[in-house]
Amino acid sequence: MTKYTFEFKLKIVKEYLDKRTGYHSLSKKYGFKDTQQIRRWIFAYEIAGEEGLKTGKNRAYSTEVKLNAVNGSVAKFSDKSILV
Image 1 (cartoon, helix red, strand yellow):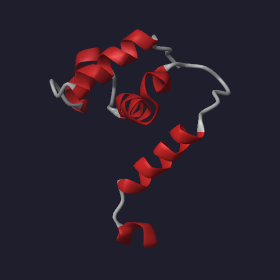
Image 2 (cartoon, helix red, strand yellow):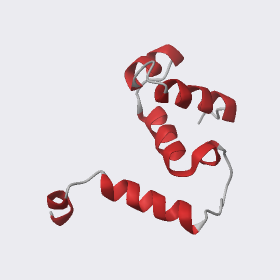
Image 3 (cartoon, rainbow, N blue to C red):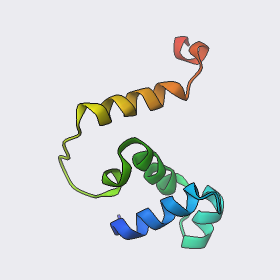
Image 4 (cartoon, one colour):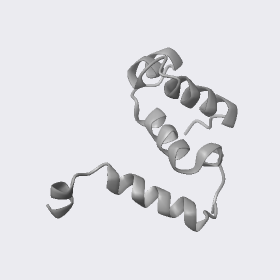
């Protein structure tokens, strides 16, 4: 598994958020085989900010960050899809 620097991850996330390019374009530009890794970094950034891009084992998250993660995930689904 390749490890990427915090700066590299942040550069890609910022490039995506600035709406200059999408997942697929970024994947091709930086040599990823698919969009999964970039999507994970963007999700981590949206939930925990820059801290979400930093590597480390056994990271402790605040209650606020945990609630943001749950609320962000739930908001992506409609009420009907949750019931199924």
